[in-house]
Length: 271
Image (cartoon, rainbow, N blue to C red; front, top):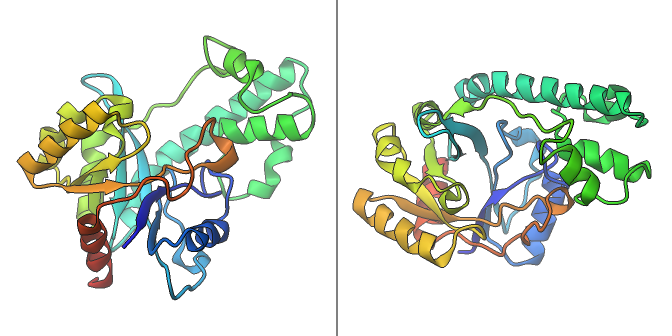
């Protein structure tokens, strides 16, 4: 089994559609993938049937540790009923959309040719700053996606350098668990939050993402030790965003352990 369990599509901030992700996975000989868009679960009806590849609709919840003040992303797999997860994430999606509309208004005030109507093709979807940058590049108002304009506008105290309030990490694990799913701590090396695992386990955490390009060798050793201590699955994935993330890793470049793939997908088929 070869499984990439962390992929983003056009449902959130990925550049590839679900169908395109499936085509890429097939071309790389993968046997299992999970679509884990930010704060929304792909509709199963939008996943085309394939015979040689198992495709799971999952989620990556943009959460936060309000005690230590740090981001904590939580992956969710094999959820029996996603309605409560969708309801949990809806306020965050609404805040993200309002945040992006505010950024668009500021950019228009700065003299750029941009307005909300430029994003009507994303009706029903949420606008991310990556979509704003994509439009500015396509309309030839900015030279490239992640060059100086991006870093001086959306980062480093720029006019659009502000963010939204995220969801509570403990509650995120709990809502995935209550939905009958498997909650996994995503890329702890990137956000340096592995010490939160004991508290997350009490809420139902079942795994940690081991294979991720932002986990260093030292991080991975610590993750393995933590997983052994608490009996957790070791998952993995490329966290693929395509052209909408600077230096996005290649689909299939990071894989979950076979034990995790077997457990996650058998849990899904038994529901």
